Image (cartoon, rainbow, N blue to C red; front, side, top):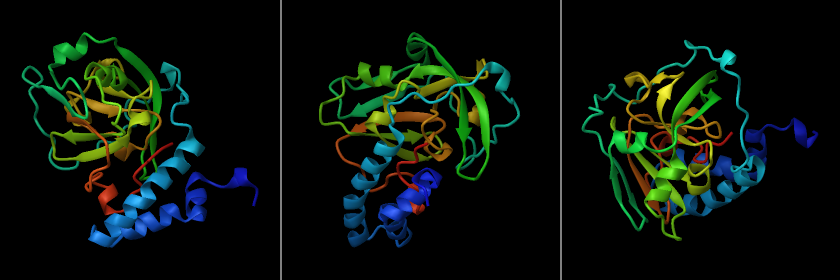
Length: 235
């Protein structure tokens, strides 16, 4: 089979890394599977970074491509009610300047807008315009330490996820507060949600309340990842 005809998933299956990681995750996070998973995940990450080039810019679309009704709303639990007037985004962990930022603080940062494709692992996709602050700019305000390699996200509904640092500081990774030119609806993650064209939908946490930089991946790496989903989740 010609290499160009192989899907990204098939390449990982042939490498043996992704399949083993899923098997270990499905068996539970016992001491053995966690130890082996810790050894395999860096290999998975390096393979995906090589194939996907996470710092390359992804395609953006014209505004005319937007389908305002295409984005399906998936909620981990009941939609949390977060008061944007008292909300504080916490940025902490492996940083020199931990922060608590109000929405007004975040609004003062340059507004970045992009029309991108949101791809769900369930098999659907939608063209959406997101607007917000670049996560790269927010992380820079906290002055990350040289040892930081990962970013862990907590959400108001109890959802949690983690990313590699290069993906988090990608120029098209946003903490969005707008959707299609309007304030972000609560159902879609207001006041803040992750939005990026380089990650699958389950990596794009809604209702983000805390961003923690880490030197190593935690045992609990993501709600769906802990149930067997691929950790990197790149496109």
